[in-house]
Length: 236
Image 1 (cartoon, rainbow, N blue to C red):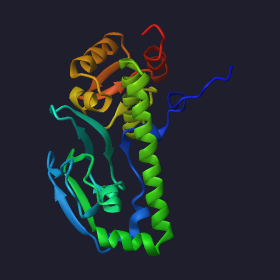
Image 2 (cartoon, rainbow, N blue to C red):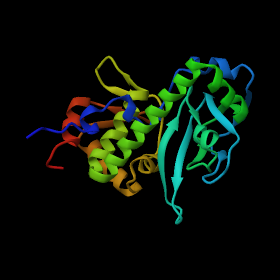
Image 3 (cartoon, rainbow, N blue to C red):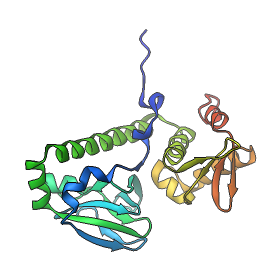
Image 4 (cartoon, rainbow, N blue to C red):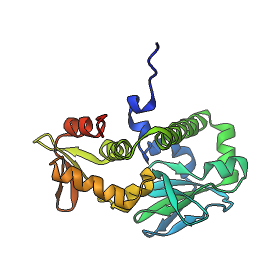
């Protein structure tokens, strides 16, 4: 019987919900773009809005969330520096499928739709950069669908934590991984589709077992290999 390889077996940066790209890819279009600053918690646009701009993160982070009618939400990805969002509405002129919110003080380039489409028409390198961005997000969303369909709570937690380590983990001289940003249990719950209570219980278990500690409020993974083995254990 042929053994199938799943995206869970191929975890890499394209599975991380923290999306960061090289802002050099957009150099041709930001020279005449408008730059605006948003405070932490500011809504850039709502799910269902029509947007007339492509947004590009110069500095800061923006979370893209999907809301249900009952108010529950699921985070799709976090756009870090060099990452664009809002491109789908510019291309197909349908309402935005996400709400975009600044996670921290954030500077965004606002590129009008007409300017965006013109650049696509005349600049093959820019078009390729946009296609790479869309491919990355497609893989990410496919991975999220797979997690929701097949993975248990510990596996979802593992992928979310690995995404954080991939993007923000700094290896110490002792071989530990210390995250350079702080995040709440609720934020991870939004990213995994689990409840805050479930995330808190997993953190408590891993802390009691010595896999995780805190250093001045920043999460530290003591032994990444042992943590991975524990979280991916069939016993869990």
